Image 1 (spheres, helix red, strand yellow):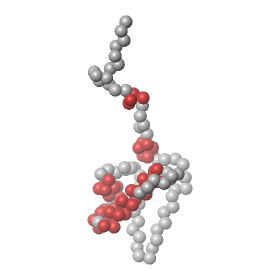
Image 2 (cartoon, one colour):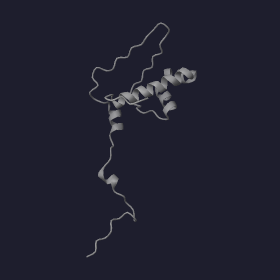
Image 3 (spheres, helix red, strand yellow):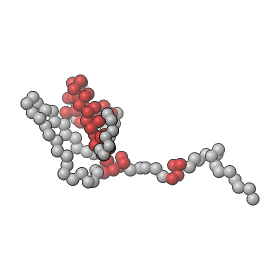
Image 4 (cartoon, helix red, strand yellow):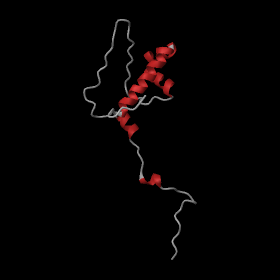
Length: 110
């Protein structure tokens, strides 16, 4: 999947995760049943972890003759705390300093 200019990275990640879940559910009946019954367990099965365990996941299985439309939340200006925790962390200046006996700066001569 190619990166689209101007598209929110979280939206891209969501679309990729959704596509992976749907692809697996289409080819694996047991996974599909797990996804419907326990979406968080299905995420853990597919990705090795549940990336946002505090969020409510709803899986709707379309029936023949139906079409499901999902509208995004009206107010998306604020990220949930679970996503903020994933985005935080960053790095500090000290991350660029090497520590160890061979990494000490040379002693200045008097």
